[in-house]
Amino acid sequence: MHLRRLWLRDFRCYEQAELVFDEGLTALLGPNGHGKTNVLEAIGYLASLSSFRGAPNEALVRAGATQAIVRGEVDNAGRSVLIEAEINAVGRGRVQVNKQRLPRARDLLGALRVTVFSPDDLELVKGGPGLRRGFLDDTLVSLHPRYDALRSDLDRVLRQRNTLLKQAGGRLSDDVATTLDVWDAKLAESGEALAAARTELVDRLRPAMAGAYDRVAGRHAEVAAVYQRCWGDGSLAEAVAASRRDDLRRGLTLVGPHRDELALSVGALPARTHASQGEQRSLALAMRLASHEIVLAETGTAPVLLLDDVFSELDPARSDALLANLPVGQAVLSSAAGLPQGAQPGRVYRVEHGHLAVAPAA
Amino acid sequence: MAVYAGPVQDLIDELGRLPGIGPKSAQRIAFHLLKLPRDDALRLARAVVEAKERVSFCTRCFNIAEGDACAICTDPRREASVLCVVEEPRDVVAVEKTGEFHGRYHVLQGAISPIEGIGPEQLRVRELLARIEPEGVQEIILCTNPNIEGEATAMYLAKLLGALDLQVTRIASGLPVGGDLEYADELTLGRALEGRRVLDTG
Image (cartoon, rainbow over all chains, first blue to last red; front, side, top):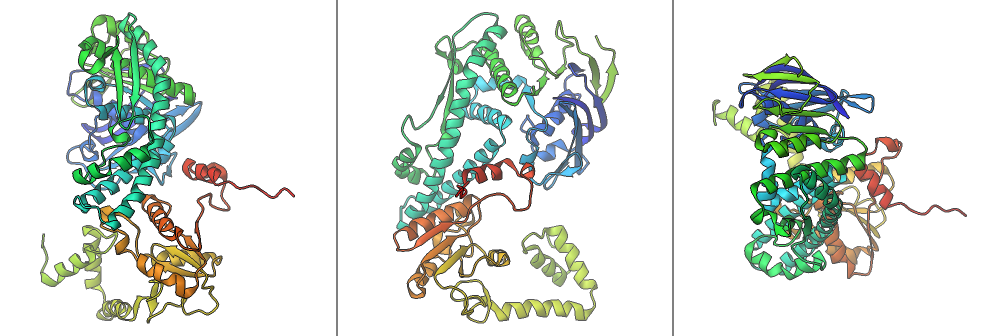
């Protein structure tokens, strides 16, 4: 799978832009704040219909415009796929694939897959457990769209159940009890399914992560990843039942996969608190590389790599190791500090003040 | 934000309260109505008043009805022993179009959804229970929507009705008839696989 062309209209700082991508490496070079990441963000938008920076839709539309359009031509095993996304500052957007309007955003999943590396990835290791759960869920969705449905089902059940708990005001009337029974059953059903999927995914990620870590760090370390259910080994249904009184008092659902953790360790010490900054960076890169590897193995197509200014954050040894160990396939990188040593892009764009110019390839 | 003179703004506000009508549409419809010949506008107003005064909910099944009971409840050819439970009157129309169902309906007027402030007591559940004995109901088909709220409502009713001596069934989910498998979305096709059945090979 590779992206051939990208057209932007009123997206972020771009009024109009057109880019052609190399089948191998394309580099976007230029000072910070001039629009390099915006190009990567637009590519990411075509894959997931959301910004990997977590920006809301209205932030993607150029100031003064009401609608942004991102179009991308993807080559999927020789077949040309045109993805067109209309992003509205107010209201819902629209998506078309090969000029056919998609009834549901979910139908787009799989038309273009990306793996994003960004400087914020360090937070995967250092930040709260929600980011790690999000990492697992995003990888699951890349593997199969049914996980997108599972995730949104669970979100909806949690919202309904939490609202009911708040409405109850701490008292358990018969009416509340019978209605709560129903939401408990729904929570147990989708919660067990998501936790099982995440556990299975972590079992597959673990060896890939350990291998990638050694390659990026340039030396061997014991890297472990363990999925921890917040309710232990028993059934979620029992745990939810046992937690009912506390849930009612707090007006919140206190057990479920929305409170689980992906525990990471380097050399048998918890990575979040005990690993050095360098180890944390290597681990974050290893997580992204492992996720990429598993999506490639499962779907048979390599996701497009989006490398958002990651090399400038790395010391020279890690930067070289990452570049040497990049998976085969298409990659688009942005850099404010010039090309990393050894990178051989087939195409280079200079990005300045929201203008793109083709520069001679290195 | 009142921008227009009193009655015009009132009209826009009222239209804006309708489902699926935002402020822009409300404004457009309001100005369209103002341009209409007087008779056309009055005809619309009369239709609203007439519908509101003559149409109400069936006292038995809570479908829309002219008078006390709806056309289905008063039809002697309908079987009283089978009840199809749906969320909204428009679902009755959908099931009726199939021509496959010859029993009666019970309209819950919603589905359990704490976010919208709807619990079992806001639905016509008590009225459903009250019908079972006197009408001699033997089967209840739970025909709520196949989404989270519809499934939760079906589960709630199944538990409630489980103690009674009658059959409770849930409609199946599956593929649209006359379509091609390749165009089915993964979720529907997955559900259809789950709900597969044995073919008679004899």
